[in-house]
Length: 596
Ligand code: FES
Image 1 (cartoon, rainbow, N blue to C red):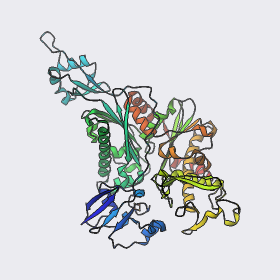
Image 2 (tube, helix red, strand yellow):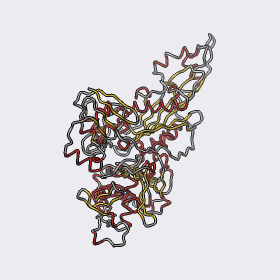
Image 3 (cartoon, protein in one colour):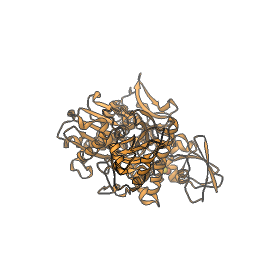
Image 4 (tube, rainbow, N blue to C red):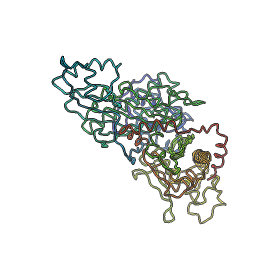
């Protein structure tokens, strides 16, 4: 049988046996859909509109959809099975997220590990009997791996070629290949593989010039929104690991191809890729089994720096190109955080600073030139809009800020369109507004009607929704008591991680000189609101720096200079890791931080 999938003005015709779910069929097609719970029928986010179906709605699907989505005619893709002639439409809010690629890259060294050099060799004669290998080494000033047999076989041609001057491709001054190109450019890519988004940056390696960037949602998101769902998929589904590995490699090749055509270069002109991501993403990139990252005692296959011929990873760049995978610290402090440290330069500073990357996990490093300690807390997906009744990612129409102006509740939406839900930055703002205006108390409880002052401008917005006390933001969107609890748990986990590190460093909160907020959420969040709800420590506002995509910036630094590759190795060894699940102080910090 065949079904049609409508996505972003395209129609995909997909054949089906009838046993698959609609979600699985969408995942196999070129269409995109979010599935934060990985199709486990828990999140209620895989919204679709379906025509020509007789499939009845189960109570569970009805409950997950909620009144508003039911009214809009939505169904959930992971509950439905195909029927011949069925048409499935994926709405915008199930498809797109806003992606952050900007960063403030500060470079003080340009010294790429990869090099190209045209050489002139001397024609051998009887009086000067130098081997081809000796001839190349003398004239290039480079080293060679004497056991690289394919390369040895090319040396005679390089010496005797009268038509073209050979170009040597080197890595750390060791010859890796020989090419004969009269024209050609010399480029490299820096890659940040986030659980949610993937960004590829293109640089000219002749002069260090930034050339362009492309980014997309990570295609693996169809197999789960967070690292745990991806680990589950990799370890429990048949060929799960191979699928996730293939999906990310294919996406990187597509993004690289897109950058090349945008900037008029060929993939063969790219000689190096520097790649970062969290430890699970790095495992999936390399095809390493992440199963033990997901369970006690959280042991990855490797946290080392790896350096492969790019072709071995499946990356379609120059055949002599190198793929550098930056190191991680532990299962939950990944190469993206090492890259973030390079970009924020915590390791160089005398003052003690904090780097925080807020996502489903909150990763943080506290330190200075003297010492750096790190931890990761499972904040849960609330800040990404999941587990929130009307939560959504950073999609068009998401309420991204909430405040009071002229005595009225006001909000903004992404792209200034009709609100479709509320994203992380909006929820943080909303909770701060509710606290400031005595709608909820410091324990997160909604005040009873008789406790609310008659003149309270927001008092009339409290109502009961699905049996829960709730606050009406718009006619169709509200924040429930359960949402407040979700935010409370998430912020308590993050704040407890920060205060545990501060205590272990034997300093006071006020001794923290700067807080660098990494990543998308850190960039869009209102810092005052984050401090108001206790997500960030209460410090002077100017100490907090939204630092953009520090992971992409750090990867770019490693692409552009071996100085930073070497430094990444050093940081990997220097950053201490605190495991919070066994830390006796963490639970107490967590309880203390539950209060707003
Ligand atoms: S409910 Fe369908 S993916 Fe979560």
